[in-house]
Amino acid sequence: MIEYILLTIATFWLILTGISRRFNLEAKGVTLVPLVLLMVRTQKFLTTVNTLSEKMKSFWNTYASVGVAVSVAGIPFSLGYFAWNAYKVLSAPTEAVPVVPIIPGVTIKISWGLIIGIIILFFVHEFSHGIVARREGISLKSMGFILLVIIPGAFVEPDEEEMKKASRLTRIKVYSAGSLANFLVAALVFILLLWIPQVPDGILIYDTIPGTPAADILAEGSIIHQINGVDVPAYETFSQELSVYKKGDTLLLETSEGTVQMVLAEHPDIPGQGYMGIRPVQHVTHFLAIEILSWIFMLNLSVALFNLFPISRVLDGGKITDELLNHFFSEATSKKLGTVFAMLAVGILLINLLTNVMT
Image 1 (cartoon, helix red, strand yellow):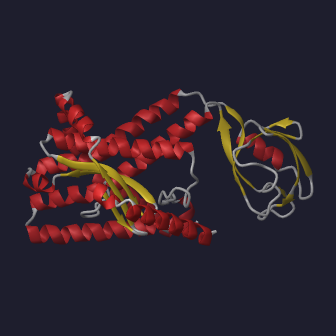
Image 2 (cartoon, one colour):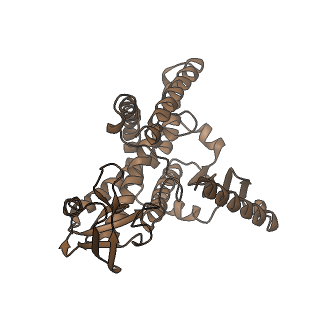
Image 3 (cartoon, helix red, strand yellow):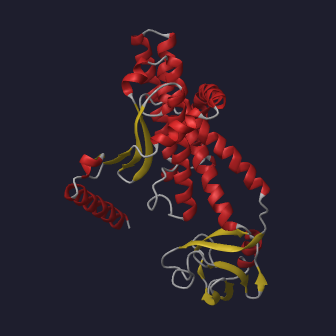
């Protein structure tokens, strides 16, 4: 499986490199480092950002100030949250919250919910940076799309000279704007999720496990409604009904794709008990809308928190931390403290990633 993924990635970059050289994309604002980095710059959205920054000026000024407060409070919260989770990883791995890099098609299955969530995530984050930068009098050189190996992203490119000449508070306002936008989107979507009725109406097959009875019989994305004539609208009902069957028993499943017959294998962890070989997800009414909103919520909240991680010169939280340290300490001391914070943050992050191998 991993060989197939690596081959696909290499082929993608090979084709991309060929297209770039054939059409001289570098002259059109595209930066390409084969297998590593793709940056596509454009000025198409700059007019929109400028227009938005000139409307509701008092709102954006207040927004920028709130962003500073949220980020200054959010940096220690983010560090504390991931530090606590790192402690859980080392002391009680099963209780830790899994931290998985979002790599579409590799660490996570591609779906419309994921795609829409990523688009909204980048859109609000980068537009927020851009609007606040313009409100603070910082020119924007470009906006664009970035691909780091296979991890997608977006960026706003402010005028670096103007950023250096701007006040420290102005720079902090610009750095803080992205996470605030993501927090606000997450909060709004959370309210919407509470409002939408969610009635269980079957078991969705998220995917099937190779070599099991379900692998060649049940299609990913189909929904199980009945087992041998018994309705299974909720996961609890499904699990309870399935638990009474043994290895070799035959099930008649009513699914969204029609009636399916299956002979159960033996459960890998429970001797004698029947096993289908599926990864089930509770399906509910308005499932597509809820799936999309859930992705928007999770992505925006996760990125807002992670972006405030104090990794110097890399994440916005690190840039804000550097500015605060430079305000209170000498340049030499602030550099040392910034390095300590960055090393601590990277160490905590690496421990968090251990959840993928320890659980």
